[in-house]
Length: 187
Length: 300
Image (cartoon, rainbow over all chains, first blue to last red; front, side):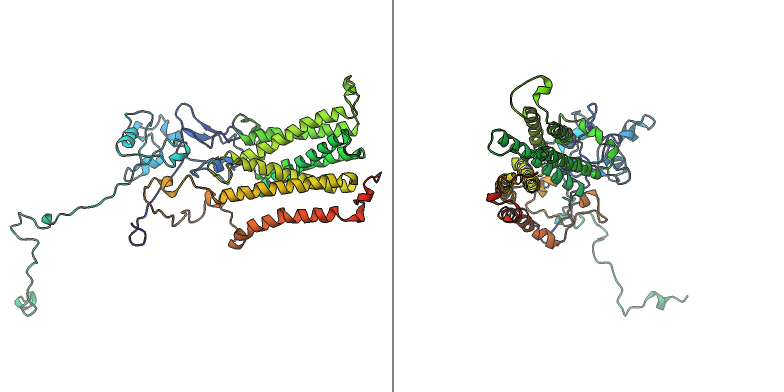
């Protein structure tokens, strides 16, 4: 068991709103400012209705809501709702900014209700999971398990079979007493 | 948790207001069936106006934790799903009922003003007061459920939360009623005082029960389920957010370790034995006309 340094692993864990199918932050809102869009399931805050009571932040088990100290309303990940429906953008750019920005394409974007979408296939085939499933919030955003990058080296691969020049062998090195280039040439 | 002071004021003040009103109504019912003598006329209306002042004070305090107080009226919109919304509705209803109750007593109105003669003096205030009692208990339910309905906060998600809010409100309201009666109607002081003791002892039992329950909570969520890593040993080494964030400010009390360690015991001492001792001392002090011999003292 890895319990003590250096036998530990560090896990970087980015987290934003998971856009739950059954979002606990929505029913507690007294004004209806916190809502889940019926057409696409994105959980949003109506900044014109929010009174800034912070009750929704208590109700969110994932801690993804926070108050905007300047506008005094609750804010959260909008799934870049302005980008993904922006018809002026080229089709492949209509994705949340975090998905586009990730240099290793670790983030995927798509319709989890469409069984053939990229994200549904990834969840299904790569063992995607939900965070804290025990509360029944049914997050739409899933996480894919970590894939450890390990190189397996077989001993027979250490020496190349077809190695006529014997490249792995120690390179010839002149003895210290032998004449060097400086001794045999005159500049 | 780092609760706003305005929320603490809100729950404390409306608790006293509700409890005081319930105390007054209980006294009126006792007086109607002649278990208690009739108090002076201003006992009820002045008392309910004080209760109303507590409720208004709580309501005013609650505005201070809002980011947009000018939009507070919107918070009555989602009463179908939100207990906070329900509280926002029930609180003005209770305030209205308490105000009408005070008015009825001030003008000494009976059901005869509506053309109904029941032959019972104070029948109208009994009816209005019964409505107020319903609203008062409904408000305790709403206030408690605001916390109890959040199932992820397992310390709160129990019926004990509602019971504790109710009993704390009753204990503080009856305590205030005891002091109020000592000034206005000393013949009621013992009645209120004994009920304060009963309420305080009752809430001591339920609060201890919830402390024991909370000490033995089995966490439904673990670090493993939070990040989906199936390993027996997962340790959080840093909270992230080097410069702080909403979560680190809102959900961390920020109190020094000494305060954190002692708060439970300070609470247990200040909230239960201290009021009981003071009540006992006050009730057994004969210097201010509270003694047995002055039970029927007439106060002008």
